[in-house]
Length: 92
Ligand SMILES: [Zn+2]
Image (cartoon, helix red, strand yellow):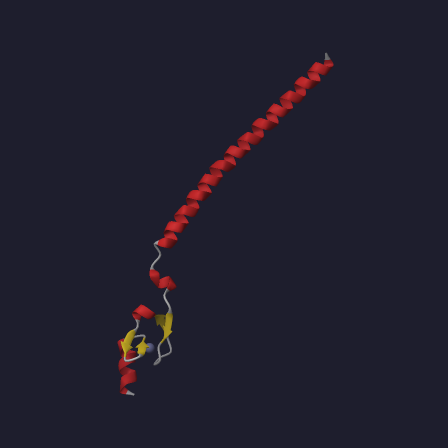
């Protein structure tokens, strides 16, 4: 009789351990889904970031300041940070 009780006890312990581990797995599944959604949002945010972030920087030959290439003011083969620098360099 005590042997049957022993096996029943083992079966109960296994069932409890199984249900606990299943609950833990389902929780981590939810977390995984949440993490995947978060990563997706981050990727979309990165894709919508303005192009200026990856734009090459140029150095103004007049004042030495760094600026994004698209903000530059061109004259001949030189690119300045502003029209003022361009004009000042021209006057020199
Ligand atoms: Zn300048």
